[in-house]
Length: 359
Ligand SMILES: [Zn+2]
Ligand SMILES: [Zn+2]
Image 1: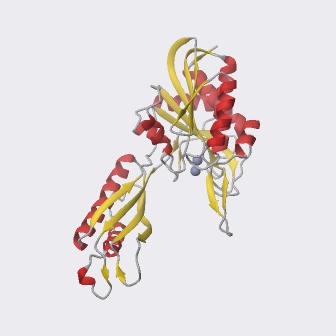
Image 2 (image 1 turned 45 degrees about the horizontal axis):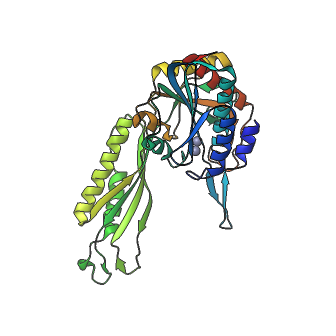
């Protein structure tokens, strides 16, 4: 609880979690963990047992959110509960350290920049992650999904793919449009085509333009360069790939029609794909602590956590913890009942106890 209060006071944006990282490092070292940096401000802490065995990781995200104020200033705050996740994983590590591991290794992974959907990929690309037999995560949930006293072993995120398509045309004076290639026309055509997309009407997905921007342009000049941002959502990774491909085809066709070159930048937030064995471990741990386990929660939100499995090949599971959280995640006056913290710690400890042999 003290750790949570301290972390709550030092909200920092993704890849800038310097104070958070410093605080966690000193706490972990005092608990006897071997600690090293990973993906910049991230930390990987290890506690080895007396004998070899499974390598199991608990992952917490570290970053906070930035809000714009009316006067133009910005406010940082932990509106997604990542301070709580760090505190719970730290407390679970402390409890396991007190008890001692007989066989295997416990890794605590404090990951930067979850909110950008880039942090987990950065950890995988860092190359410093050891072989893991399982990695577990947990997120506080809104009261409407799970009230305090309930938890699910399967928080099912959908795939989220933010994608920016840029069209390159040729600038010309507005009086001589025939001398130019209008990048904005290709962008507009693409937006209309994406709105008309029809794939898999039996599955849940959406693709829509959320922003458009012409670069360095005046009102009387045919724009040379224009980019459109699309937000793609899909209930599975296969559908996410198909949707990405379909939007790209719309962009390429529109680009070709108008005569523009097309480039695309995207970030891939994967849908949840869990290891059945780890899910069972989480279910048993939740049942032990709370008496019952809530069914899988299908959330419209996304998480970069799934990159550990999709890009790193690590078996994973991700739990949702009831916290009486209101009015919702990412609301700047988000609050929750801190009584959920010891519940989360106990669930994580029981998971570790089931996967590693403790003293
Ligand atoms: Zn968030
Ligand atoms: Zn979050």
